[in-house]
Image (tube, helix red, strand yellow):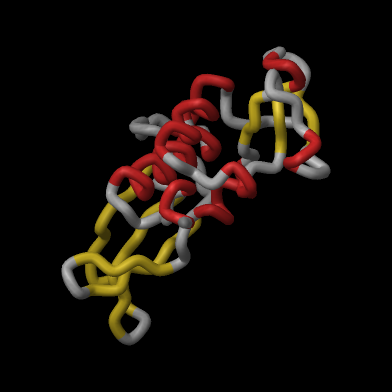
Amino acid sequence: MKATTIEQSLHLIGLGLKRTSSDLYYYKGHRDELEVIVKHENLDDEDIIAWSLDALINAMPKIIVHDMNKHVLCLRYAEGKAPFMYYVVESGINKGTLVRFNNGRCVPDAYDALDAAYQMVCWLLEDGYIKKEEDNG
């Protein structure tokens, strides 16, 4: 099972990603003991939550508004392509890309959808497109 690393997980928590959006955890912080979360309230203080690719994708808003344009989330799973990007759509036609992430690499064998999703979620949190945990009141 693949998930965000402990460092990435702590960074996402620090950025304010909702803890309840996580679906995995590192048992007592051990890098090799990744478990599925059944109930968040049952986690120990030493456990570190983590996100699978699906959980990161679910955390991404499907539409964001930037400069009065609606940008739609596009997911592509083709090697060497940007797997996650937001673009403006008018009448079903891509009118321009706002942002795309492919783990900062263009080499097909360096493609990693989880790292690209992590970078996209960081960008969305930093730019205020995802509501942060402390914003919930």
